[in-house]
Image (cartoon, rainbow, N blue to C red):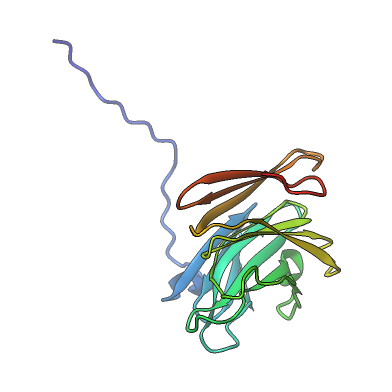
Length: 212
């Protein structure tokens, strides 16, 4: 019987960091995201901490001004250097999730930056938590998925804060679990992938209509 000897390969060099920024020691870090050479950390007080490769930290208040509200989702959009945050009232069933777009480069120079608040209409009379969110690289489209089973598409000059159009792509009783946009280099082909607890869906959102 042939004998085999396992070999170990060391692909990374381990290095211990003794003096981490205080942001990493926050007792209630809720979310983490990354993009390029930056890491984003959101805590329970509503602050987002931008951490650079050299562990420099830039912090700003992204939400939590109202009691019971927290940052529940956070996505960095590398092409436009934009951070998307979702703020929800976790203490009450009523209320609409607030979606904000933050210019990352300006936030690293100053903390008192005003975001663009994305305007949209609730897809149903009963408020449901926002369970999934996605945006195209140019932020010309944002998709929202709700626990009530609705998938909503927002399109237009979103970063400019001007008029947008909204369309409900899907309604089902199962909660939406994930959303993801896939685009080509020119942005002429835009496909939205969506999953719920019951099915996987694909929508072509490039044209004037969003066809499943």
